[in-house]
Length: 376
Image 1 (spheres, rainbow, N blue to C red):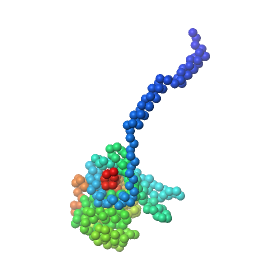
Image 2 (image 1 turned 90 degrees about the vertical axis):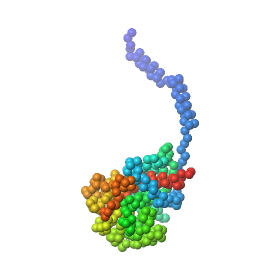
Image 3 (image 1 turned 45 degrees about the horizontal axis):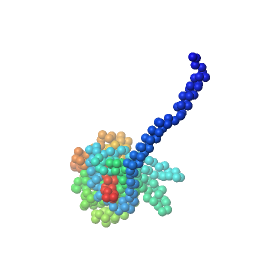
Image 4 (image 1 turned 180 degrees about the horizontal axis):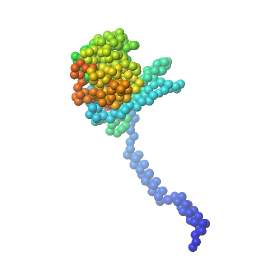
């Protein structure tokens, strides 16, 4: 029999129609299976509880630098053992327009192996137009999100507005002072920059070296800082007339400024050896320490995390000027904490570059949860 085009079209049409008709048995089976799965999911899967919100007042009234020192020290030690997952920070630049900025947003986080939580932090800084509002607002804000490391569920949101960030920075300063100076080489401690971070550094210094002479210098606020810290810590503070004057007196110098140029010259430092603990540089645009000091054969350069300081810390400037490479880093702070490298050995200068690591955020996040939320 000869198959005509008409016959072929009729066959194809019948096949197409059959394909378009629902298969009642298959349709019934699929619906039954989906209904069964949905029933099981609804009966066995619970929802996560909402994270607890701790407001700024609760956070600031209950946490101190002393709370954070031990946990931050342990975090640095874990860093040196490669027991911390700490990614590079994320940076969002907010260009000034009619509806935004100027400002910067930093996102950091980390997990210290074996701890029951990990932390992600969002820090907004340099929103200086806030100061012009009526009423004015601070230029910085932020939150810590503390997460259950077993389930991955957020436990709490801490509205810290830089308070916890400054605490963990102060705690890192305490660790740096403890391991990179000696009591004999920390009789006089200077502070260049006298804002909120400097106050926490002063508290940290008092926790590690209870008896010292404090010296303060800043373009604004040094007198108030010296007065307040003297009253709070029971330590005498004096105000220096210049950064050079401060350097001529100081065995240890904390720098915490927002600028992009060095705050002192290497030749101003005492020849007996000075420990400089720098915490102002956390962006590629910032610098506090002269690069020639970092590269000097008379200086040990210590990073909090080399992969980070080479991008946003003081090391970045020395690399840019062709004076150093990452191979010239003497040690990461955690290597000194756990005894792999030595701290102060004589009259050398030591620069500790604190850019702020996610390990520190994880440490203070755990402390905050233990102290404020662990019993809930």
